[in-house]
Each structure stands twice: as structure tokens, then as C-alpha cells.
Image (cartoon, rainbow, N blue to C red; front, side, top):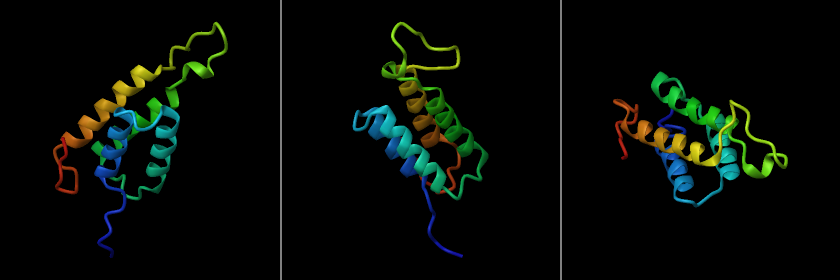
Amino acid sequence: MTDDPGVTDAAYTDLFRAYLDGASDAQSFRRSFYALMQSDERIGDEVRYAILQRVFFAGEDLVLDAHLPEGEGRDDDEIDEPTFRQRIAAAARDLAQRPDDGERQHRA
């Protein structure tokens, strides 16, 4: 058995904060988030997993204006970047405030 906690909640909240603070664009955030989630071997806790799934699906639903053909709007299941940012902010808050993060750390 190893003492290595693997991917921590702090790794996610740091990534969320960096995006929300403008340190990365939405595409870079999605790539980093997906890579982090794929390397996370301890997603087991249902509350944590549900929060991360909301971010995952927000990334899947995000359609940047540059990707829309001229004159075409978003489909009902597609979101814009301001909505994406709101979902990331909510996930960062929820991850930091969940009752037991398994690491006994809570970062607001």
C-alpha cells in the first residue's frame, strides 16, 4: 500500500481557480481537466465523482463561438463560455465545501 494520495481535490480546485482567474482558456482547461481526471485513480467517492462529472459534461457541452458556423446558434444541449465558467465556479465551491473530502482538507 502506498501513501501517495494520487490526484487530490486541491489539484482540481487549483485548476478550476486558474481557469476562473483567466490563466488559461476554455480549450486548455478542458484538456488539462480531462487529463487530470483520466489519471485520477481514486474517483470512488460519490459526491466527488458527481461534482467532477458536472465539469466533464459542461466541457462536453461547451461550444465556443469560434466553432459555430457563421449565423448558426447553439443547440439546446450546448453552452457558451459564460455558462461554462459558472459551472466551473459552482464545482470549485462544491468540491471545497463537501462535508468529507477524504483528505480532511477544505479549501474555500
